[in-house]
Amino acid sequence: MRWLSFVTNDRTSFGYVTSDGLGVVDVGKRSEYASLREAIAADALQSLPQSCGDDADAALADITFAPTITDPKKILCVGLNYKAHQEETGRGGEGYPTVFVRFAAAQVAHNQPMIRPRESNTLDFEGEIAMIIGTGGRRIPQSQAMDHVAGFGIYNDGSVREYQRQTSQFTPGKNFTATGGFGPWMMTCDEIGDLDKMEITTRLNGEVMQNATSDLLVHGFRELIEYCSTFIELEPGDVIVTGTPGGVGAARKPPVFMNDGDLIEIEVKPIGTLSNPVVGER
Image (cartoon, rainbow, N blue to C red):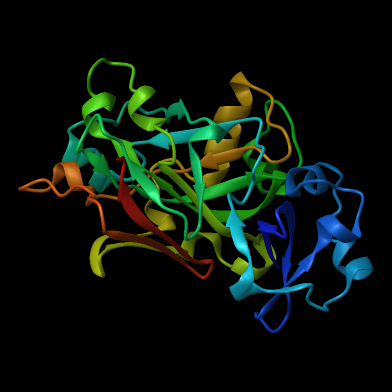
């Protein structure tokens, strides 16, 4: 199923896409749960469609999307996790995942503008596959890792390169307001099928910038869960953003950054497409 968060009638809610792909069932209105994260934590994603049915409360075309998980307790981002990206940056290859954090306040939803800040013209795209934790845990072995996953989504880890590179700690460049695109929804693992065959493509104004398949991840989904759960307990609704392929704008000659009026799209087959216009901050 495709689960999403959205705003309707000035109310933030969550639900799932109807079987015909045209509507949304407003589970927030029909259940006791206030957010998708709460429903995941209650292990209710299988039972809720049975009780809420398939009659749409709103047309998919009429809703305003919210970030797929609006209130994650943790967003753990993995850098340098495709060989081609390691090669173009000259970094990585230490044998362990490179992990940094992004804050929920820096996220932006599908169809909403990514903001190029006034402070810099180096807003770069990073198309990524996002993994959403279903069942929490600590020190999760790889053999059990996928039992802890609720589903997968799409992320654009928009990076202000100038601020990312000011010091060895690049948190500021990864957390400017409205630079982390997350959406349009989370697809459950049963609909995705072979997790190693997901294909990610980044398009800037229709031109392909990045393309790779998930089997090319240096540290795969299971390894990332094992590693991250070693140092922190993973909780339902936590998001692990798994890394970007080669082709980022900063590594191109000449560099290609996102500008006011651009359209950036991240497609992950079979999940869908995350689309964001780019707006320069006034």
